Amino acid sequence: MPDRLMTEPRPTGPCAMVIFGAAGDLTRRLVVPALYNLVISKLLPEQFALIGLDLADRSDEDWRQSLREMTAEFIRAAGQEAKLDENAWSWISTRMSYLQGDLNNPETYEALKAKLSEVDATSGTGANYLFYLAIADRFFGPVVEHLGRSGLAQITDHYWRRIVVEKPFGHDLESARALNAQILKVVNENQIYRIDHFLGKETVQNIMMFRFANGMFEHLWNRDRIDHVQITVAETVGVEKRGKFYEQTGGLRDMVPNHLFQLVAMTAMEAPNSFNADAVRSEKEKVIEAIRVCKPDEVSCAAVRGQYGPGQIGGKKVPGYRQEPDVSPDSHIETYVAMKLTIENWRWAGVPFFIRTGKRMAARKTQIAIRFRGSPATLFRGTQVREPAPNWLLLRIQPDEGIALEFGAKIPGPVMKLGDVRMDFKYKDYFGATPRTGYETLLYDIIIGDATLFQRADNVEAGWRVVQPVLDFWTSNTPANFPNYSAGSQGPSIGDELLAGEGCAWRPIN
Ligand code: BG6
Image 1: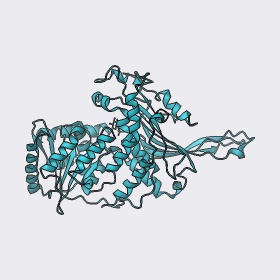
Image 2: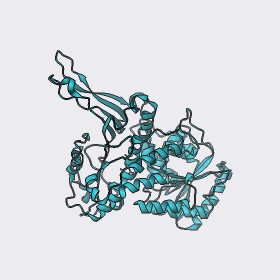
Image 3: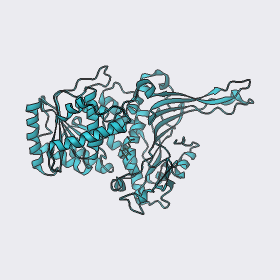
Image 4: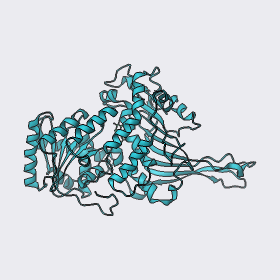
């Protein structure tokens, strides 16, 4: 299996990619712009074909045109002066074709099979196929079964077949297990790429580099030197046009067992023996496995929820969650979640990991904040130096990607006074900023067959196991005071109380 430590990108071999849900938002906003970026970086194979499959009847040209517009829009939105690169667009668009089909109809898969054979013959794609399921999750299992029945998922020594499954992977532990079982009856685990798009973010991938390529911090990275960890994924957006989906899902399912737990795993994992996909995923799995699963009567001390009411963001009035389209006016769905995680292993015993995520918060911020234990302040007794502030290491995942270290320094002058200072590394200062969707690395990795950044079946189930008691408790106990935070605020006070109980306080979201 490929190893991630490559000095040069590994060349990608011939293949055809099929996108189920070709007309959908994900395809248009993220997948195709990411493919375009891969063309610019010359990371797609010469023998490449892209087939879009969806229910609507449309022509190849019509599909290409709609994707061209979205890709151009992506470039504009990234604040680039550059326009769509016509050569790159022509490279990809001449390899695109559209197929109309109903996902539930076996004939669709026969037509797809014929189309793929044709593409193999004309484009030299070598019968290597990547099936990307950018569709509603209820279709994941059935589509994989159809692919199996039609023979399209069958592998041999001469070609590969891979299936990419988007989130949500199940709605709870039971459905995630059932979906894994359904899929794994048809294909092998190593043919399945379960996407968590957070793992496509450069700054998330850098957590491992930062920890394991720098000897400086690793020996401080444990219960002896770390007081607690705070992981925040705050968004200013509301539920936008996804009210229907969100009413079924809520903030816990949407963000915690997947994105938040990936950040926890990256922060807390042991060094893997290598950057081999299974070595890395096994270490991550061990962390999630070590998180204490609450008993029902412990849930309220370990997890709290909130829902935004009307408020102001960036000087503009915004509606509350209950006033959003497709949301029930007395909805009890949570848009904010905070949890205290206890990792029961040798390295982290006694170090709380606090996680929180919310929509319509004061600012957009995804950050891992590590609070180190304080210094013994005895030396400063009887001086004007107030108790030295604790040291923080901040891994800024987005926006303003970077890493900062906060510590105390003497304020120049005749008296001993301590000021708080910050050393700050910004990615853009060193590496520039290129517009990326976050899907580029993920797509490239699937084509070269590197599953490191994808969730294994056991990773997914381990995440659901931890949140299941919270889901159960919240389903049977309706919150009385929703909405309990204003849009544009720091979240509900109950989130602050969760930390106050441990003598800690959240870092402000600003
Ligand atoms: C998605 C969630 O998985 O992640 C969304 O469904 C959320 O609700 C999004 O807004 C956040 O991702 P990002 O990349 O914008 O931080």
